[in-house]
Length: 59
Image (cartoon, rainbow, N blue to C red):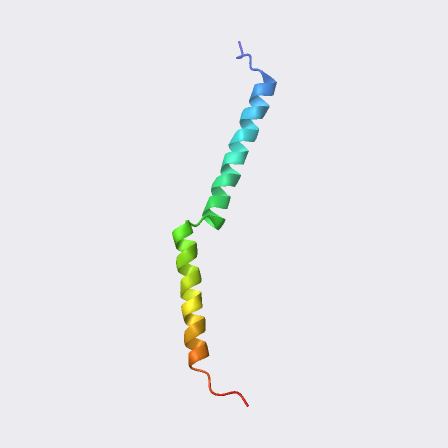
């Protein structure tokens, strides 16, 4: 005989698994630590200051 399952629980479990895969994809796409974000902003600021310091006088 076939195993009896609760359809409500099966649908909830399926939705939970799909949510977990979406969350994993988002973590890979957007997830950075605070230290990584701060490091990137400081690198960008440093590059902008270096570029501004190397400009010639504007007319």
